[in-house]
Length: 216
Ligand SMILES: Cc1cc2nc3c(=O)[nH]c(=O)nc-3n(C[C@H](O)[C@H](O)[C@H](O)COP(=O)(O)O)c2cc1C
Image 1 (cartoon, helix red, strand yellow):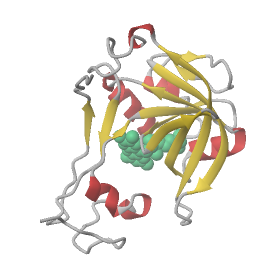
Image 2 (cartoon, rainbow, N blue to C red; image 1 turned 90 degrees about the horizontal axis):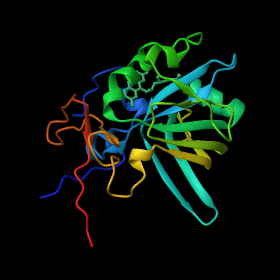
Image 3 (cartoon, protein in one colour; image 1 turned 90 degrees about the vertical axis):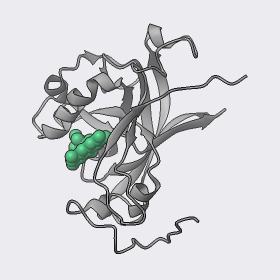
């Protein structure tokens, strides 16, 4: 037996907070697909550094370049405004040990706040963009944004496509499989409140790290 759903949200998917199914499709909760977590850095209009704890993205390219595709960036965020204005951002991958510090940047998101200070992060100069990198990141992608498109046409989320112009990887993460990337100190993932498809209930978010198997 398989649970089958169409584009319309089934009645039984109860809303736990106002706007839950505006900013996220019910299918995101129904599918429960894990996505890598990271922090987007930009600069506010007054030059202060800004941090946005984020997921909902993929990283892809070909001979023509490597791209950070931020597929679901909320249009009401400072990050959206900053990228629209300056056309630049950095994607900073941190380990799960920084989860609480990253949440501090969500809770203290006022326009006049220096979010590096709020999260206790060190500013690191980027090589190809004028937005700062997070010094504690094990991997940072410096990006120039060429495309910013409304994702669904509803004016709620946007897809920002950034061409990666430079990357920086910490030494302990630079040995292919034999390093920290896929350990407890490496990439971590968002499990975004998966629902019981029978009842439509479920209000627990989770994070996960990887347990890789090397194949020949
Ligand atoms: C794990 C996680 C939890 C988040 N929690 C919230 C939240 O409670 N409220 C919210 O508006 N955004 C939340 N966000 C989304 C963005 O991080 C948040 O909107 C961001 O702080 C906006 O920053 P900006 O306006 O500086 O771009 C969360 C993101 C992640 C990855």
